[in-house]
Amino acid sequence: EVSGRLDTITAPALDSSINECAEYTKNLILDLQNLEYISSAGLRVLLSAQNKMQNTGSMKVINVCSEIMEIFDLIVIGGGPGGYLAAERAAHAGLKTLLFEKRSLGGVCLNEGCIPTKTLLNSSKMYRHATESEAYGVVATGVTYDHAKVIERKNKVVKTLVSGVGAKLKKCGVEVVKASAVIKERNAEGFVVTADGKEYVGKQLLIATGSSAALPPIDGLADSLKEGFALTNREILDL
Image (tube, one colour):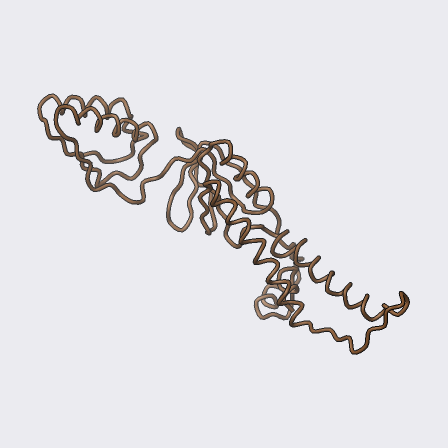
């Protein structure tokens, strides 16, 4: 039985223990029920031991906890233009990459900034061109502005581009976790990040959390935002 953490129970010590047990039995059962963490070196020891035992007997690993941390080459926190592009490039270079995004891929630019505002601006330009087209020898009558359809088109454009980012990351093998990530610590294996009660380890960490609306210290502002009386750039784009 192996318990504790395999960054504390060193990989060489585990290897020695397995080899010693293998001298006395042809059938080895390794119970990992109490194991809370396994390092990449520990995983290599287990795989190597299983391969060795295939020639002389058998080695069975049981009760492996599903929450045991997986080691990534790179963890990216933030799925905006900086984060998702870095994750894509890293995956293309052969790195095992994990990306966290708590809202939608694309970040502020794609969801609440550049893209939606330019989409709305383009609709307003189309309306202006239609109403002032007579100066160019084109006469348009009965021109109307349907704001609900403008917002519907804006949402469709954003959704299409967000889906495209997700598809691109999936194609190059980036694992995406939709959750808020917290940096817990740095240990011998790398950076430990927690999200939704699960821990992840990355040899390298890229923080690309972007920006958020700055709220001035005005009494009652927080409550007004919750009730919809005050708006930030996020809410105003859906009016």
